[in-house]
Length: 116
Length: 111
Image 1 (tube, rainbow over the protein chains, first blue to last red):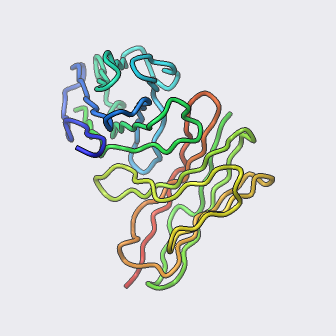
Image 2 (image 1 turned 90 degrees about the vertical axis):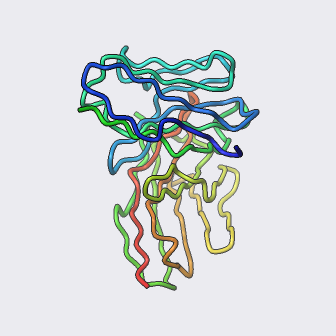
Image 3 (image 1 turned 45 degrees about the horizontal axis):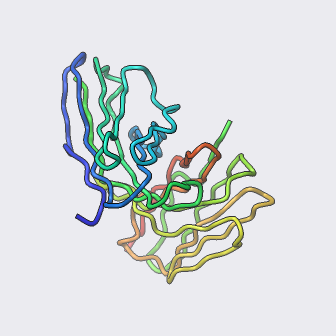
């Protein structure tokens, strides 16, 4: 498709389970970002990839969060031993170039994660 | 630390009136300022952006102004329509490949 695609759209998991969220960026986009959006808040940065390289993971809230983009295209955000505070919408965004400071980011519709 | 403040948090206007949303940022090194519209259940959609070498940009009914000295930028929507109702987020780029987003403005356009 033409836009950023995320799957699943909704995920319900029990506390302690592991989850994996997928992002298909716009074809050819070099940069890929993951954000966490709590209800009523703006997106908060989690991590950034330039091609397959994870250049910034300073926003990941704990070592239970792990992201990868092994072939420089599709990315997966994995959360291990989920906690209730992990409940949020997880957004993926991509941008065309690697110089990200002045490039528009294009967002997917997110995965709404609910931890019971 | 890096911060983007956005006001107001909610805004109601009559159809046809103008709406203005304001943001301030903390890092003078920021040089790119996008605005996003987010509808319920959807991801943020870029509606307009401005770079630091420009003071104003307009696209049909939407305009953004930037005051680098004061470190604030504003979104202006004229001739509002019911379909403009959504949550709007400002953002600013910061060194280190990160964007910081404001906390959002819920705009309601009353027919």
